[in-house]
Image 1 (cartoon, helix red, strand yellow):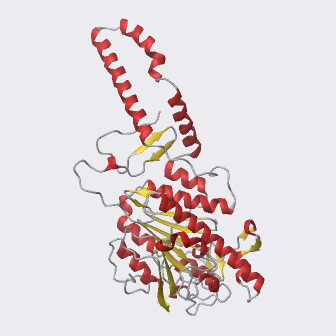
Image 2: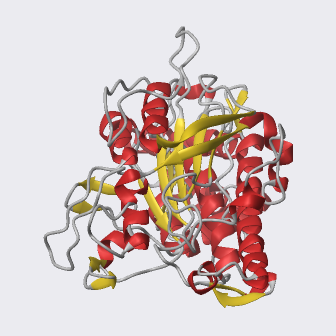
Image 3: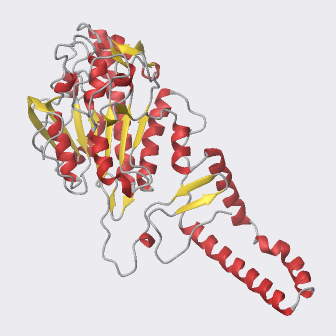
Length: 439
């Protein structure tokens, strides 16, 4: 039987504990102390990295429109999406280090710093924006931050023109010398957040059976009566009190379990190992983590720097990195656009799930800020300005959305990050090459 600490005021960290599983509860009214005023709901931050840039003429809207061919799936969320145009990540540029743009693209995306070109242990880039956030608010949740990815990679060795694989395979950096290793297996993410998926599934089945069965005490009641007749008055009284207490607790547990459902596992968690299935699962797991307030800061790499994943499910058998060197060939450009569009469709699905999740009278999308994009513009030119970027969510009402926010072509993306910090009430004068908050 699942156990829950029952009291008038539930801790924000209260959880259901069953055999082999610890299941966090969503934010409940019972977690607000009696006689307290309205609680301040937290703001969540998500950073999604897309490798290899984009087909920019189909990404950017024409005229005064907010939508485009690639971004069409975001139409239902246009009031909650801001396009960031004309922004750059200077740290991803060569600065005399020659080739290695994909390693620099990934490592500089959230650090806005230039990585040291090395294939050894002396890696150095900068602290990423998600870890700046985690250092300020991470102590308020079970997990200070959550690092996710879709493509595993080597922790050591050289992956891109003399740059350590650590640069290509990580966007979250706890210190300038230490990346946060990402988890690429949805099942492992679920297990970390909620417990072993098989045990959770068993607990759900046990819960369904309990609803159809009589109290477990009924099966032993006759034995308890016989035992009572063999006990002295004091022990008999203790046994009766104990049985009454267990019965009362069981009743309270049954009521609590009816009111607080155990989180269901995302569909396909235990079986779907395909790339598109895992993309959807990772997004679903972020929603679950936010609903349970297990973390408020998440990074997601849709692929490593220079990712060469194939997209057979949308008719693109070619490796992504290979066709990103398109040489202006129409066929390759069309395939790149299909990949870009598919990823935006998955993002739209994720935003829809956030928008459908209530969090104290507002949606999780209202209470979030989701940055999506890349530190490469056109994969053929390997430019690091005029990047494909967007910011979704309302930041708990502190973000003005539904617009095109235009930089000057080389406006530091770090200024947007300073703005995201400001939304969270974190005041930093500088970050990377940014010296002012964009909003």
